Amino acid sequence: ANPQFFHQILDNVLIKYFFTAKNYKNINQTPFYKATSVLIEIVELLNLHEQSGEITLPAYITQSLLADYCRSGRARITEALETMRENGLLLSKKPIIISSYHELLSQSENFQTGNGLLTK
Image (cartoon, rainbow, N blue to C red; front, side, top):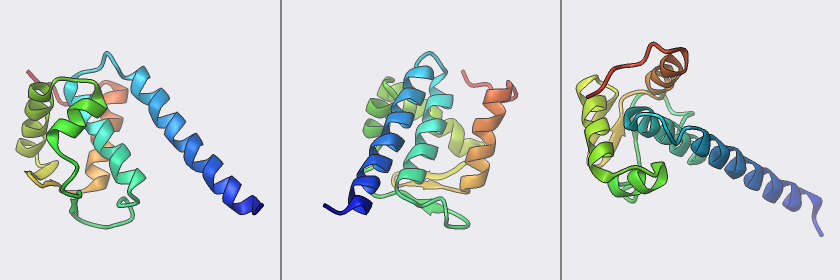
């Protein structure tokens, strides 16, 4: 048995547990906040946050997948993504292209402090 292998598995399980706990904590948040949080989470899980500039998510990351992952309706997530696109956080919804990981992260932090964007 290789201890490094077991530590890697434990690290992965721990990360997924923290993300799941965070999702349950945010269950009553607005769809915009949920979508922002989930996009940050996906970028981090796929190790795309180390890129500078725009980030194109894989084709399998769809609006339906985001809605399921957020535990929110697809229409609500579509509205949230459209609001993100209008505010410059997203460049495209299909495929999902994030303009800047740091701007997305900043938007999420603004929500936690109560200064986030207001959506319909």
